[in-house]
Image 1 (cartoon, rainbow, N blue to C red):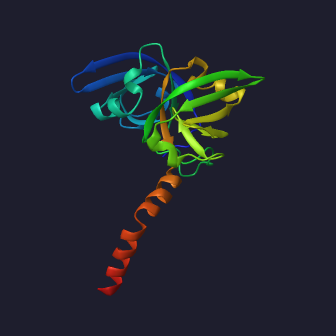
Image 2: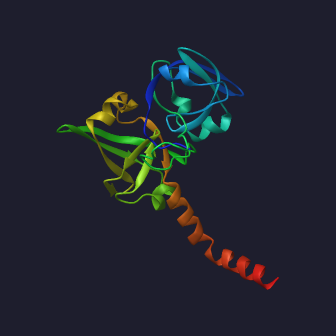
Image 3: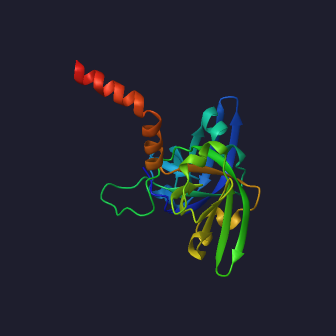
Length: 208
């Protein structure tokens, strides 16, 4: 599990594509603190560091990962957001982020407003029930608060620190980003959808 508080930005060194997926190498100082098999979130996608040295790590991308996330668009030179899983004894900041991307969205606008930045991301229709004003969402792994919703655009205010220490410093309108809705909202929505079936199942269990 992650928090959406980005530890470091890495730079994509190599992308090797094949019929079976792809391999990605990311240069980062965090490689010195990883072991083979460790999980690491890359732009909000939970990946496994397979090979590493002091300057970076390799990770495998399955065809499913390439299809449902924006990682397939990565090219050498691109910045990526990196976060290691949260430790059980660590303080919890941000919000609960699983590293399981729900969908991709498109940056509709990224504009400077005073000292901050206004970010607008267009989300797919299927994600609309899971976003609320002042709710949390992970965008490329960054824990952000939704300031407002305009149609299918969610709007966020980005403080200078977040802009400077994430891949938003290299982002632009039209970029594809990974979206993970707040997991609590998913459970609530699922509970509502299955309320009748769950009630029947519980009643059946009591009867037996």
